[in-house]
Image 1 (cartoon, one colour):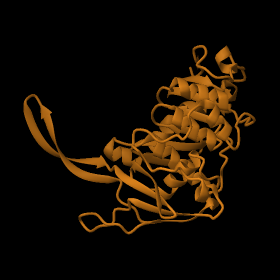
Image 2 (cartoon, rainbow, N blue to C red):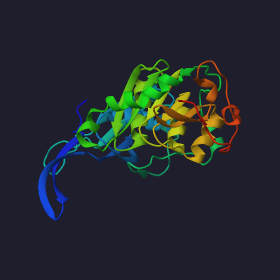
Image 3 (cartoon, helix red, strand yellow):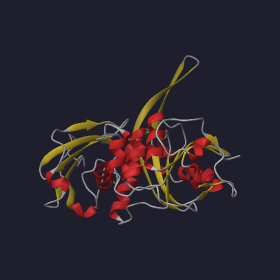
Image 4 (cartoon, rainbow, N blue to C red):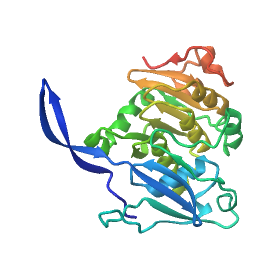
Length: 302
């Protein structure tokens, strides 16, 4: 399926010691994507064009509107055009399978999301946990600490558009032994995760048991939500988690790591899945599966 470009050219002024020099530059594209289900507008999200079908599938799955790719009969870009007469690819028309929740239980009003934050149709941790179709509490995957330490660099090496623009987040799905299964880039962290989950839906891989999801920024509540609903047992973030993200990860039985910057990382939940050389959990934070932030996290990569 054809899509718009993920990059665009522009010019900038470089200011240095009172002088100004005009230079060419490359920017990451941010464009709206309108989702229509059976002719009715559902939402508009701001995203980087590319993998739009996966983005829509992942978004709808995270919002509880579909369980499998088969709930969608067809997706197609409308042949809308911009002022230059070229296709914009900014309208995605979705046909829902009759009898599916997507066909009969959609959000009543349209809503808009930005590239900074996604839409979570959940008001509390308990509501999210109740919607998780395949709880990860019983996922006994273990991942070596040295493998976890190398995942952010592996993700960064698989970001071609970031190399040109410096303006995109990424999400990557890895096996427990560090094999890269899928990587997607977007101006929004939540969009990148939706694209990865949408890929899993198209490939018939959900729930994503035994996998590790790596995100290039912080771990927010919404990213933990999307991972939990997709059945991901381990979430790795390059930056910090939020308090609610930690609460949700513990309640959902997930393993959550933040500040994964070799050779160190902090484990905020589910430390039993991190193989640090045969030793078990070393603090109450590792053993805690309840809600709340609890004690300080355990630093396991040294």
